[in-house]
Length: 361
Length: 147
Image (cartoon, rainbow over all chains, first blue to last red; front, side, top):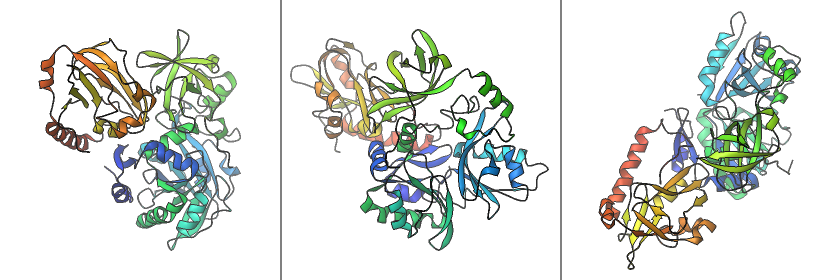
């Protein structure tokens, strides 16, 4: 089992630790709902060091990457982050990731799912033939700490003595953190304002401690994977393995904003065809009438007809409702649904996404 | 929490307390409440429902999982605690008191002998926690577990 540089800190804080794709990770420290509310109303601290961080360097960096990511790298200026995909030839999703464009250092940073890192590295290697590039998996030497919530900026200033207020959403820059040059981005997976700090592994525990101690007066709480899931579900951000996988395409998942029509990439012919001719299933969000929770894999019905399947479902602490994401037939992407919750049908209504949108933009 | 010594415990984490009227009060243990965490919803049966030892009589759902409520004894339900469904916090505060779930008129009183006393249950929890550590890796975040 792999452990992040912050494992001891989690155990000391009384976290419940679970196996998450081969990593010992905190699922919760206190209560999922309390941690969730800390992020929505104050600030939460996350250890994301299990996520894959891969640098791509070399003279052919952009030309090489452009064949396997779905965004237009040429349009990204220095310091930009963008959500994108690796796709199969069939247009289905190998992974979803954030790409960071560092033009000054001539480097791309890819932040990928922990569960897909090995697969992604193999995919990157497979397409590197004939290109002068270097692929550098920095996952072990860099930790990743996320600070999310309306008080995240104050927290970062207080804890790290840096001022990232000039960063716009989905941009990054280098800052001096604990004596070393550290990448900080204004990104996240919670639907709140927030920052992600790529701190050197040997400084991670010190940085974490500074956040916990100096953030306390701002209401900071460490947040586990349990609340990370409820937060991202409210924000309708897809989770690989739940809402998207190698059987679904970004068109079906409604993630068109991450698909450039200006560049050629693996899978594009299928994407183009789906955009032209339509898809057989569509990702939607729904509220349940009652309090039972729709879980991944449960069947969705329109009247007597099975129309699809639940991909994520949880209790929404912000809305105080049972919410879910799932695929349905395109004709059924509005109106009423029923969810088969362990043999009993529960009434649901399709609603616009996201479920939760922050007001303090 | 020191577990009451005057009640019996099931491996599925329910408890039973015989009453003076020849009935049995049933609830779930502090351990079950803690494991579930963040309770959202409970479904309890109606008075008059027949229940059987080892079979579900309801369900309890938390943010991360859902669990069957399993009857520790056989009989007929004579009372359902109306307060629990309205305020799941009672389960956290008083799992062995005001957080009781149902009362059963038992038809097989001998079944009580098949259940654990508090010391046996303490040991059962300890050993199952050790097992859990050993089998980590097969467990998912969303796994259903029996209460």
